[in-house]
Length: 395
Image (cartoon, rainbow, N blue to C red; front, side, top):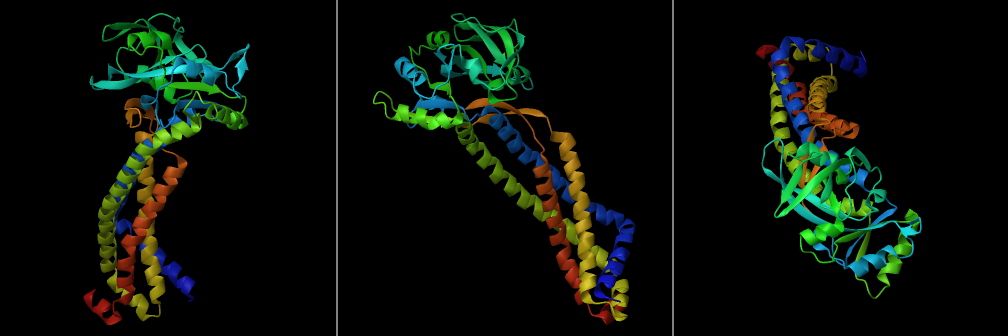
């Protein structure tokens, strides 16, 4: 028989015996499935958070902050500066007016529906053009707030996550009472985690004078960014930083992405070690129970490589089954589940949905196969190295 025929024959024999060793095989499968499910659950947070920020970013919308500022909470612009920014070259105009919105950003405490504990929810003061600067802004319920009044509209995610944010309700913050008149959506973007009010009214409520924290503009095209940026950086009246929305939100995501990546990798290593020990135990048990069979095969001319390969294939099969089971558990258990987390750049809550993506499933399946391979490597080598006489005698 050729080496390939020997490998196929020994592997088929091993695979048929898995059912007879279902108890020990199940240990390896459950261990690997648990690792995969947990890892997918952790990294789906990262995928969901990224999805929200990607849906929020556009290449033809620019955000302008004070020079050196990396987030709205650490930025400040005067009314005159906001006007200069809106009038700069490269800004798109609509009905003779620039598509520009000078905005203010504060944090308010609103209890969460799930726990009743206070959460930091962004209250954003916006200009009349703010809806035109979001990609998919649309009212889901009620109406737009009336400028100059204490009326607000609430993002869909904020309304779903936090208590009391329904049309007709009131939101009391300090001595100010805000009347909720509408709920809006924005294609799942970060804006859906916010509450919007008139920027001028918000300035008065929080004693901000005539200052803003950012100015958002729609550009004539993505290529107009350079013209716009050059116009602002060359103006001696300004000291500002200019970002596209996509750049800005990518920067906002870095802290959480780093945290989730470090945490996920640490858990992957720790749980992976436990899963490998489970696989090692399973494969050593499998090799031990078939010691006589393996010794007999080698005695009649079967080589060491087919024996090693057959054990590894069995281990990889167990890893594959564990990976598939873990992936299915994670997909049906996590995908689409809504949650909220802290935006570490603004210290405010962002709502998102866990996202179990095909790429994440593929990576986790590869990890499951790697665990199976490592768990089967040493037992396979042992099976091939045991002297034939000892194998026949011990059996």
